[in-house]
Image (tube, rainbow, N blue to C red; front, side, top):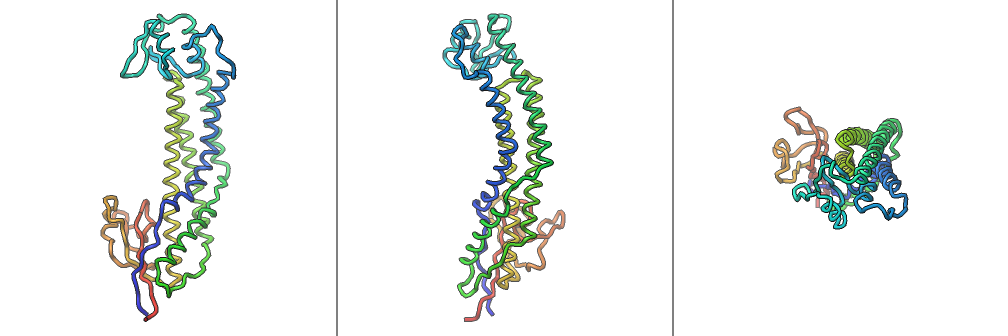
Length: 326
């Protein structure tokens, strides 16, 4: 029986995407959409779908709608030509550095000052409402199931892995019909649920703290929108990281099961050969290892694992496949 080193079954971006989609669908349902809906409902309540009163200026209307806010002696927000003209007529000066119009509050007309006071009250109500909503979200996330269908994603990934395997091994070697491991499916479900629930809970807590801080500093609506966008973007990054990590581990385990099923008992460690490869894995490049005896892949901790199992490991095993003698 001869042996041949074959190409590795690889972890592609579409594998991660298959798991990332249901993870982010959950995160959007429990955090993104409720927060965005609350903000949009508040904005709609300000306009009420009615036209601006004819006696209102462009500035007071913009203040009332939250498009413009007055913070630290300056007007900031969605400044257009008409609003800019009104502010200059009041004696405000434009700052190119901060992109705002500066003017002392005592120099503002009474109707503008009243609009600012009313808008501040409404803005603070919004801030407090969002903080309360985030507290409810955090509590619900900890108690409820995620309903994320990781099995469907795993099946998509596994079909691609099997197709890759069929293309990378000699024609004489038959790929057996190996069913997905119930234990591995349970592991990926438990790991994904735990990780995304913690991430959503953390995002809700951090966003609530940032909103509270913004409220204490003046309750700027523009800053509030920015804070919401930043924290939701961070959650998306966390979701991507979870999908990447769990997909990599799942693929690594599936590769091992499939390779063993066709008689592969050893492999050659292959790295990406780029600057991101960690030093410990660079030392393993090109060396042969047995599936029954993983190498030390982290010298600092002594951890032993096969390619793809370690945190953010992008390495792959080149299978040494037994082939019939010609």
